[in-house]
Amino acid sequence: MIYPVVVMKDKTSDYTVAVPDLPGIITAGDSYEDAIEMAKDAIDGHVECLSEAGEDIPRGSDLQDHVANPDFTGGVWFLVEVDIALRHP
Image (cartoon, rainbow, N blue to C red):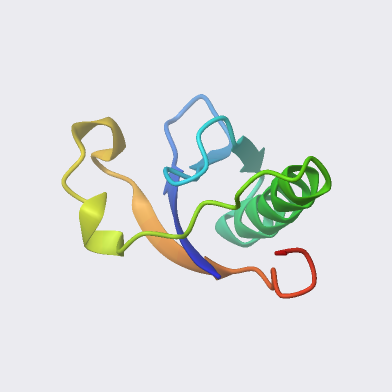
């Protein structure tokens, strides 16, 4: 599954990552690379929890569905792939 993630940075913070298709996942890192790795771990853990609870795993939406969102103005977008094959019923 591929999820769009956005990395935001201001002068007083680390690189903060949000995953719009998985509300509640917000993580951060010292660099873009670190932030993306943290996002992968957060997505993986979230998907695992959903699976263990027997809940549906939200599908990743198209990147274009999010880029115009004013909440993410100035953010840098990445696509993160997470293997959900073993977790999805």
